[in-house]
Image: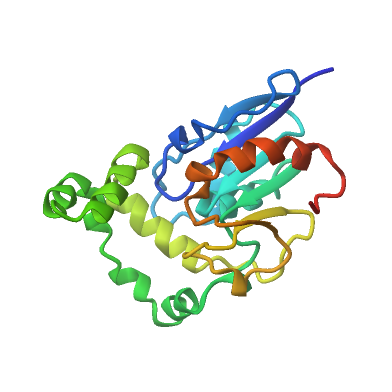
Length: 224
Protein backbone atom coordinates (compact mmCIF):
# COMPACT_ATOMS: atom_id res chain seq x y z
CA UNK A 1 0.00 0.00 0.00
CA UNK A 2 1.26 3.47 -0.84
CA UNK A 3 2.13 5.57 2.18
CA UNK A 4 -0.05 8.58 2.97
CA UNK A 5 1.77 11.91 2.47
CA UNK A 6 1.42 14.16 5.51
CA UNK A 7 2.54 17.79 5.26
CA UNK A 8 3.20 19.79 8.43
CA UNK A 9 2.99 23.61 8.64
CA UNK A 10 4.48 25.20 11.79
CA UNK A 11 3.05 28.11 13.75
CA UNK A 12 3.71 31.79 13.30
CA UNK A 13 7.42 32.42 12.55
CA UNK A 14 8.27 28.90 13.75
CA UNK A 15 10.52 26.39 12.04
CA UNK A 16 9.68 22.74 11.28
CA UNK A 17 11.83 21.89 14.33
CA UNK A 18 8.63 22.12 16.39
CA UNK A 19 7.70 18.76 14.87
CA UNK A 20 10.98 17.06 15.79
CA UNK A 21 9.27 14.71 18.29
CA UNK A 22 6.27 13.89 16.12
CA UNK A 23 6.65 10.37 14.77
CA UNK A 24 4.14 8.58 12.54
CA UNK A 25 4.44 4.89 11.59
CA UNK A 26 6.75 4.83 8.59
CA UNK A 27 4.97 1.92 6.96
CA UNK A 28 1.77 3.97 6.65
CA UNK A 29 2.83 7.61 6.46
CA UNK A 30 5.44 9.80 4.79
CA UNK A 31 6.15 13.08 6.56
CA UNK A 32 7.04 16.39 4.87
CA UNK A 33 7.64 19.82 6.34
CA UNK A 34 6.58 23.20 4.97
CA UNK A 35 8.29 26.46 5.87
CA UNK A 36 7.37 30.12 6.03
CA UNK A 37 8.73 32.44 3.36
CA UNK A 38 8.76 36.22 3.27
CA UNK A 39 5.47 37.75 2.08
CA UNK A 40 5.16 40.07 -0.88
CA UNK A 41 4.09 43.64 -0.22
CA UNK A 42 0.46 43.67 0.98
CA UNK A 43 0.10 40.00 0.04
CA UNK A 44 -3.24 38.41 0.92
CA UNK A 45 -3.38 35.09 2.74
CA UNK A 46 -5.03 33.64 -0.38
CA UNK A 47 -2.08 34.61 -2.58
CA UNK A 48 0.40 33.51 0.08
CA UNK A 49 -1.29 30.11 0.33
CA UNK A 50 -1.05 29.76 -3.45
CA UNK A 51 2.73 30.16 -3.20
CA UNK A 52 3.18 27.71 -0.32
CA UNK A 53 0.97 25.10 -1.94
CA UNK A 54 3.52 24.83 -4.75
CA UNK A 55 5.78 23.03 -2.27
CA UNK A 56 3.32 20.15 -2.06
CA UNK A 57 4.45 17.42 -4.46
CA UNK A 58 1.84 14.75 -3.77
CA UNK A 59 -1.80 14.33 -4.69
CA UNK A 60 -4.46 14.19 -2.01
CA UNK A 61 -2.17 14.87 0.97
CA UNK A 62 -3.00 15.30 4.63
CA UNK A 63 -2.32 18.87 5.79
CA UNK A 64 -1.52 19.51 9.45
CA UNK A 65 -1.08 23.08 10.65
CA UNK A 66 -0.27 24.54 14.07
CA UNK A 67 -1.68 27.89 15.25
CA UNK A 68 -1.30 30.39 12.35
CA UNK A 69 -0.11 27.43 10.29
CA UNK A 70 -3.54 25.93 10.94
CA UNK A 71 -5.16 28.99 9.41
CA UNK A 72 -2.85 28.77 6.41
CA UNK A 73 -3.49 25.08 5.67
CA UNK A 74 -7.21 25.78 5.62
CA UNK A 75 -6.61 28.36 2.92
CA UNK A 76 -4.34 25.93 1.06
CA UNK A 77 -7.05 23.28 1.15
CA UNK A 78 -9.25 25.55 -0.96
CA UNK A 79 -6.67 25.30 -3.73
CA UNK A 80 -5.91 21.55 -3.84
CA UNK A 81 -7.71 18.33 -3.10
CA UNK A 82 -6.75 16.97 0.32
CA UNK A 83 -7.31 13.70 2.11
CA UNK A 84 -7.75 15.50 5.43
CA UNK A 85 -7.01 18.86 7.07
CA UNK A 86 -5.99 18.82 10.73
CA UNK A 87 -5.37 21.93 12.79
CA UNK A 88 -3.66 21.97 16.19
CA UNK A 89 -3.84 24.85 18.70
CA UNK A 90 -5.60 26.95 16.08
CA UNK A 91 -9.05 28.19 15.02
CA UNK A 92 -11.49 27.24 12.27
CA UNK A 93 -12.89 30.75 11.70
CA UNK A 94 -12.68 34.25 13.11
CA UNK A 95 -15.66 33.72 15.43
CA UNK A 96 -13.34 31.50 17.51
CA UNK A 97 -10.95 34.38 18.14
CA UNK A 98 -10.75 35.59 21.75
CA UNK A 99 -12.09 39.05 22.54
CA UNK A 100 -8.64 40.66 22.55
CA UNK A 101 -8.10 39.63 18.92
CA UNK A 102 -11.51 40.94 17.88
CA UNK A 103 -10.68 44.19 19.69
CA UNK A 104 -7.31 44.35 17.92
CA UNK A 105 -9.10 44.04 14.57
CA UNK A 106 -11.65 46.69 15.43
CA UNK A 107 -9.03 49.18 16.65
CA UNK A 108 -6.24 48.05 14.30
CA UNK A 109 -4.09 47.69 17.42
CA UNK A 110 -2.02 45.02 15.67
CA UNK A 111 -0.14 47.88 13.99
CA UNK A 112 1.51 48.66 17.33
CA UNK A 113 2.58 45.12 18.29
CA UNK A 114 6.32 45.23 19.14
CA UNK A 115 7.40 42.80 16.43
CA UNK A 116 10.84 44.37 16.49
CA UNK A 117 11.42 42.82 19.93
CA UNK A 118 10.70 39.33 18.55
CA UNK A 119 13.55 39.85 16.13
CA UNK A 120 15.91 40.59 19.02
CA UNK A 121 15.56 37.36 21.00
CA UNK A 122 19.24 37.33 21.97
CA UNK A 123 18.93 40.79 23.52
CA UNK A 124 15.77 39.82 25.38
CA UNK A 125 17.51 36.73 26.74
CA UNK A 126 20.27 38.84 28.26
CA UNK A 127 17.68 41.07 29.91
CA UNK A 128 15.89 38.04 31.42
CA UNK A 129 18.82 36.81 33.52
CA UNK A 130 17.54 35.73 36.92
CA UNK A 131 14.01 34.93 35.78
CA UNK A 132 14.04 31.22 35.01
CA UNK A 133 10.54 31.03 33.52
CA UNK A 134 11.15 33.90 31.10
CA UNK A 135 14.58 32.51 30.22
CA UNK A 136 13.10 29.07 29.45
CA UNK A 137 10.41 30.58 27.23
CA UNK A 138 13.02 32.67 25.41
CA UNK A 139 15.17 29.59 24.93
CA UNK A 140 12.18 27.97 23.19
CA UNK A 141 11.84 31.03 20.95
CA UNK A 142 15.55 30.91 20.21
CA UNK A 143 15.34 27.26 19.18
CA UNK A 144 12.08 27.24 17.24
CA UNK A 145 11.76 30.75 15.77
CA UNK A 146 13.02 30.61 12.21
CA UNK A 147 11.64 33.83 10.70
CA UNK A 148 12.86 36.94 12.47
CA UNK A 149 12.10 39.38 9.71
CA UNK A 150 10.00 42.33 10.91
CA UNK A 151 8.19 42.54 7.57
CA UNK A 152 7.02 38.93 7.93
CA UNK A 153 6.00 39.40 11.57
CA UNK A 154 4.03 42.57 10.82
CA UNK A 155 2.33 40.80 7.91
CA UNK A 156 1.56 37.69 9.98
CA UNK A 157 -0.11 39.53 12.85
CA UNK A 158 -2.12 41.72 10.50
CA UNK A 159 -3.13 38.72 8.38
CA UNK A 160 -4.36 36.49 11.18
CA UNK A 161 -6.21 39.31 12.95
CA UNK A 162 -8.01 40.17 9.70
CA UNK A 163 -8.75 36.59 8.61
CA UNK A 164 -12.18 36.81 6.99
CA UNK A 165 -13.46 33.23 7.34
CA UNK A 166 -16.70 33.56 9.30
CA UNK A 167 -17.98 29.98 9.09
CA UNK A 168 -15.96 26.87 9.98
CA UNK A 169 -15.33 24.12 7.47
CA UNK A 170 -16.95 21.15 9.19
CA UNK A 171 -14.55 18.73 7.52
CA UNK A 172 -11.54 20.25 9.33
CA UNK A 173 -10.33 18.17 12.27
CA UNK A 174 -9.48 20.41 15.22
CA UNK A 175 -7.16 19.26 18.05
CA UNK A 176 -6.98 21.71 20.93
CA UNK A 177 -5.50 21.82 24.41
CA UNK A 178 -7.88 22.58 27.26
CA UNK A 179 -5.28 24.97 28.73
CA UNK A 180 -4.53 26.91 25.52
CA UNK A 181 -3.79 30.47 26.59
CA UNK A 182 -3.79 32.01 23.09
CA UNK A 183 -7.08 30.53 21.87
CA UNK A 184 -9.05 29.72 25.06
CA UNK A 185 -11.47 26.82 24.71
CA UNK A 186 -14.46 28.92 25.77
CA UNK A 187 -14.35 30.48 22.31
CA UNK A 188 -13.63 27.25 20.38
CA UNK A 189 -16.20 24.64 19.28
CA UNK A 190 -16.14 21.09 17.93
CA UNK A 191 -12.61 20.05 18.77
CA UNK A 192 -10.76 17.00 20.07
CA UNK A 193 -9.55 18.00 23.55
CA UNK A 194 -6.09 17.34 24.93
CA UNK A 195 -6.01 17.46 28.72
CA UNK A 196 -3.43 19.93 30.00
CA UNK A 197 -2.49 20.99 26.49
CA UNK A 198 -1.27 24.57 26.14
CA UNK A 199 -0.65 26.56 22.96
CA UNK A 200 2.76 24.88 22.60
CA UNK A 201 1.47 21.34 23.08
CA UNK A 202 2.98 20.33 19.73
CA UNK A 203 6.24 20.41 21.72
CA UNK A 204 5.27 19.12 25.16
CA UNK A 205 2.28 16.87 24.35
CA UNK A 206 3.93 15.04 21.49
CA UNK A 207 3.33 11.65 23.13
CA UNK A 208 -0.44 12.18 22.95
CA UNK A 209 -0.16 13.29 19.34
CA UNK A 210 2.05 10.34 18.38
CA UNK A 211 -0.47 7.95 19.93
CA UNK A 212 -3.56 9.54 18.39
CA UNK A 213 -2.61 11.18 15.08
CA UNK A 214 -2.43 7.92 13.08
CA UNK A 215 -5.96 6.99 14.13
CA UNK A 216 -7.24 10.53 13.50
CA UNK A 217 -5.73 10.56 10.01
CA UNK A 218 -7.07 7.15 9.03
CA UNK A 219 -10.55 7.07 10.50
CA UNK A 220 -13.66 8.46 8.87
CA UNK A 221 -15.21 9.56 12.14
CA UNK A 222 -12.64 11.78 13.87
CA UNK A 223 -14.38 12.03 17.23
CA UNK A 224 -12.27 10.23 19.83
